[in-house]
Amino acid sequence: MKVSMHALSADLFANILHNLDWILGKGAAHAAQKKFDPAVLLGARLAPDMLPLTRQVQIACDIAKNSIARLAGQEPPRFEDNESNFEQLHARIARTRDFLQGVPAAALEGSETRDIKVPAGERTLEFKGLDFLERWAIPNVFFHVTTAYNILRHNGVELGKRDFIGGGREL
Amino acid sequence: MKVSMHALSADLFANILHNLDWILGKGAAHAAQKKFDPAVLLGARLAPDMLPLTRQVQIACDIAKNSIARLAGQEPPRFEDNESNFEQLHARIARTRDFLQGVPAAALEGSETRDIKVPAGERTLEFKGLDFLERWAIPNVFFHVTTAYNILRHNGVELGKRDFIGGGREL
Image (cartoon, rainbow over all chains, first blue to last red; front, top):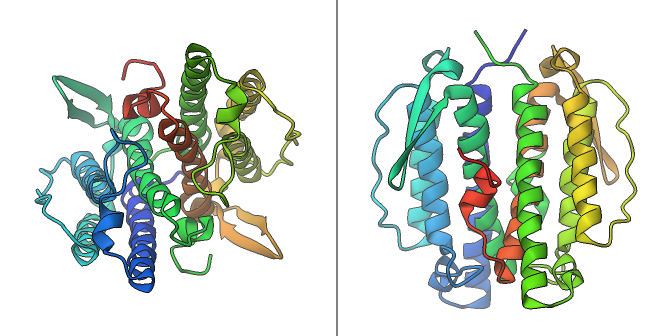
């Protein structure tokens, strides 16, 4: 017996985006409690030439959405990058999770051998589906979700790994 | 056709630990070039109550190793946490990757339904193998590898997402 591509792609991403949503909620609550403009957190970065929190969330959502669409052989829906507050980022995550949860496991059947092309600057990367998931999609989504966590944590939001792993749910 | 647990656990972790090794190499090179004590980077943190770089690397290795051992129904080998320089961390990663690559795919056959217990403080978490991989092991390993990256990046090491995703290899 083996496992479906769906479990370790669409399910995996929907789960960690739930946790990202929870983490962002703690960021917004922290700003409210300390009475500072939440936009300070949304614009925070770990280095001057790294992307700020808002972009980390947008990109985590996009890579999850686009990767699952590619694995399913679909054209990914396009979301505008126009969020400017926490509520809008929550909505972006919700839309992304709705998309992920709307892709049936059957649509990903056989996707492990599908030819996947990913535009990357002037190049186009080419993968088989399983390699794409393992070497591109999973590392990329977790990179941006963890970086969002680290930006908030670095800025004093009270978070622990339990928030990242459990997203406010019992494990 | 479905995918093996092995591909999205032992392979996945061996791959991202390769990239962690590459990223650490850039950290050590940066310290050498700027002529500062590499131990400064090893002790760096993103917040006073977060763990420093050395611990992020040790924990990433341990979660990868212990998770694969649990999925395979083996007792995980114990590694001492006694690394105090970059060379020793490279060796820790190499030992961990050797362990991961030494677990044959057959040892993880059927592990998606195996009962897994994880000590977590005073509690013991219980999962089926697939849930354990999806909700615990993968998020945990990527959390610590990304945090190691972010610590180095925050401290001026010239790294980009390409280093995290590709680890110095062509994609």
